[in-house]
Amino acid sequence: MSKVSYYTEEGLQRLKDELQDLKTKGRADMAKQIAEARDKGDLSENAEYDAAKDAQGLMEMRISELEKLVGDARIKKQEDVDLSKVSVLSTVKIKNVKNGMVVKYTLVSENEADLKSGKISYESPIGKGVLNKKIGEIAEVKAPAGTMEFEILDITLE
View 1 (cartoon, one colour):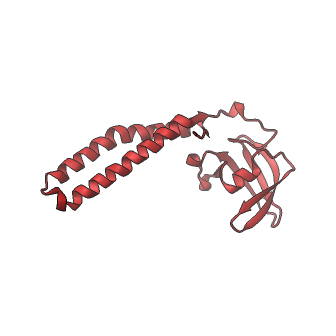
View 2 (cartoon, helix red, strand yellow; view 1 turned 120 degrees about the horizontal axis):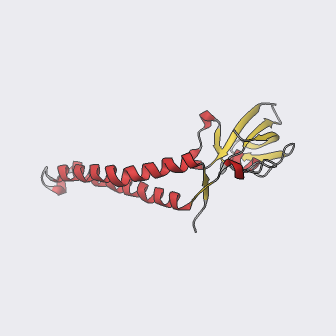
View 3 (cartoon, helix red, strand yellow; view 1 turned 30 degrees about the vertical axis):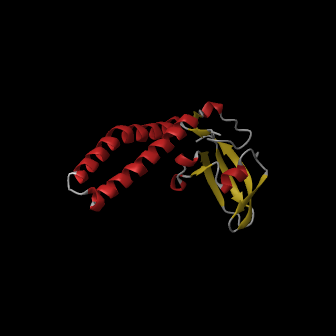
């Protein structure tokens, strides 16, 4: 079962660029490393060869993962965002009901999430909790520290 993920155009392009780089430059570099290690003698006692083969396996696993992500990706454009409720790509201002702290987050895909720039995954506990809520509603977020309540103050595009 494939799981559709929503991306901005820039976020999807970053994934495609990484995939292309690994398939071309990455594979070529890896083949060169394996060849160099193979030239160093007996393969049964060649730790460098084993390490290169392991690295190749990890790289191929990442390529496979990226191909699946790109294949299941859908671009969500800002003009498609419904601002009557919290959705993917919307920016939501929320207030912690318990301590009054106000924060603003933009909901994005897991691969685009960057807490420092205020982007959280719509699959994170807070993202799941506020998704589809309207201004004035209270979102209950189940976190490891317990259930937290957030009031939806504003929904915008940023």
